[in-house]
Image (cartoon, rainbow, N blue to C red; front, side, top):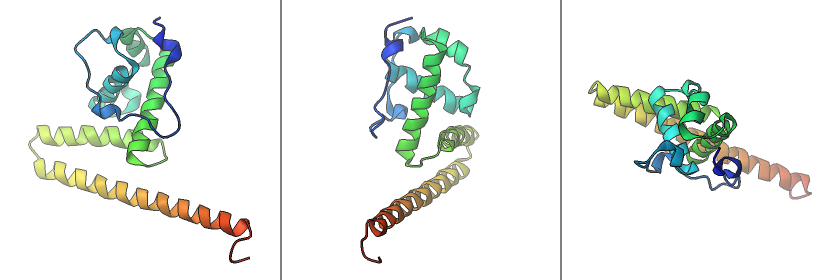
Length: 153
């Protein structure tokens, strides 16, 4: 296995790249950087419609890495999607993949209005989740302030 297999990590402090914007190069997959490998894995997930549709054994062979590394890549992709959608739940990974596949299917059928409506509904869902997360964070800060003997005690 290549040396990159044992050193591939991303920071967990909120700066995961947006793998959806990484350009996939025209070179053998075994020569991809981990960013490029993850970008292609994300594209496969979006094409297939669900993260579980990726055959990890085949992916490991394709990229000349271990199956464990592919599993780690999928975890990092989930973190990246969560971070870029700002929803703390891993389900966002699945929702994003299904949404992308749905919109692609609608566009392929030239159902542009339905594709646009789907995108708008997703946008609203994201906005609601972001607002809920901000509210939870604000509530936690207020509770900490009260617990620390701040006003209200």
